[in-house]
Image (cartoon, rainbow, N blue to C red; front, side):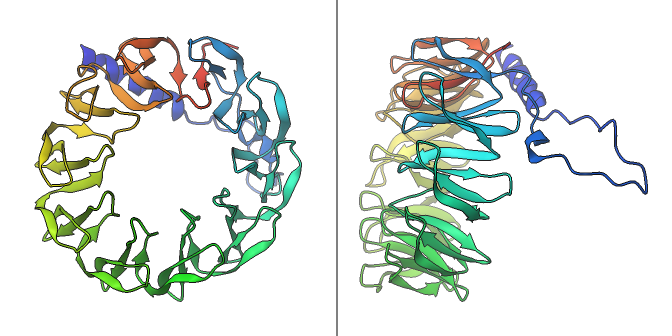
Length: 390
């Protein structure tokens, strides 16, 4: 009965999200012309509005938005019909509804899309910090934002100046002061001045982790050091980044863990491995999931149908098609009792119960009961919540 109820709950949510638009009543006949409506009309009023709840489960900001995004740097992007703006934690408009698209603030600036389909950045007063003149930009990271100019990628600074010329075929955003870039069909790694840390000679390259950067050369993965020399030869079918002196590596169709010299500490015996936090690596073997430690020992025997990484001390697990939470020592915070389970955020985690979406605390107890149609994770003390009526 539990499984049927969860399936029904999720099915109803999917139906609501995937509702087809009705055909227009005034569709032009053959030979007629029509003017496209303004982009504002691309969105309809949501059947059920969104507001924001506090950690006590109370509606702290009334539900009159068609969409609401998480709070970052004290502001949240919200939409009513086809217009986006930003509200503060009292629910007042800090920046009015005036954009076709809006994204969370990062490093004091927010990426927005105007009604000419151009992107730029605004400050917390809603003023243009960088005029909307780009078709493709990413959020600021480390003081730089990736932009596309024509068919090339470069980076701008916070005043909008082109800090790194748009000379790359592709580029990632900066991570820990490094960005992966592609030029003339090969990938390399640059620093925040645009200088190459790793010359573009690889099929793939990732930022340095623990002094080693993962690269793909001639179809195989290996690692280079800070001098750009191969520290671990390209010999693996696939590989992940280093954490705590270990990296997943695939050979002969299976994954194991290697050390900084490229030697297997945990022999290739798993279908999947990824770093899961808490000095543990999640593994999958014959369709069952568990965790191993850095020495390759099975810390939690593979027995689960699915697991996720540890966040804030707990990892969701699935067994018998129901979800619960476990600690790094394998003890259970909750029994498998939820239809779905998400990671803990600010001490609370979303779960799907038979009555609807709720939050539990780190004691495994229901902290906010399922009285809202839908919920999103907490951010800066508030969580988006969808209610029945306006």
